[in-house]
Length: 370
Image (cartoon, rainbow, N blue to C red; front, side, top):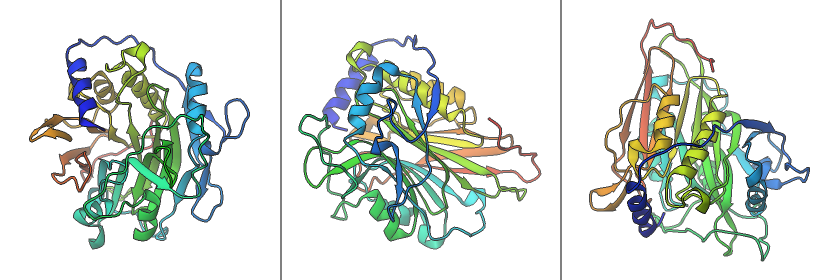
């Protein structure tokens, strides 16, 4: 995210009053194929050894966007699933699990530094909802001369070399589910970028949620991890990583929030199909912070979200900046969530947000509801 675009968008957005007229978007589950019967590699998933993996794909009912979504889809490779070598360990205590949401600025943020900060080497289980992850290599297809592609983002992290989300997962022995949204520039070596879930715990219920097209193609990712609550129950905790557009299409006010509302409603509709408990995190590009309409609707759908402090997650000049990143919670009775901002950015233009969730012993916790 470039700061000049940020300031322009924020000033225009802040000058207008909110008015929501977008209809709720329904979602439908698709097989791993294109809408018109043409197999598109970007809507399949592969493992590190090249075999296919099962992923549920959900696309918003946005027929007018289909050609643009397919066009951008053809420029990226398949989703990738890497399984942690630790598959048979007992589920960790819920209160021990750190859930982090972080926009890593396409390799500019040092994920190794975050992992060490949270304490993964001391055995703390972690789930990271990653936005602007990137992947390079042979899985990214050649780019046609006439194909659309956004500019490359490739900042240098403090540690030196950029590391892809796949390389980080394999080197640290972590699970990852990565789904590219778009090409990362036209340059060589070829890269794509998108959302991911990186975890020290095994990932199940893998789901990709392709949002309506506004300015760029956006695909959210969802998965579940098994945890143990205070009563000894072992529910599946569903997590979602999402990134909404910084701009809308011209017909929806370009620098205003109407495009993000449309994407958020499709996202929330798809997330509603996931069983509780669940956590939604990501970069909502909410220039108005908690009063942004997309954020307000997410809070309604995730009613256990704690009151938000005025976190500046995207600093611009000194202490001045914007609250673009959020964590939302839909939890059973007796579960409690807390969220804090990590002060270090480790090379990214965004601060990470970290959450913890706990349950009180003796509460009757009912999980698996929708």
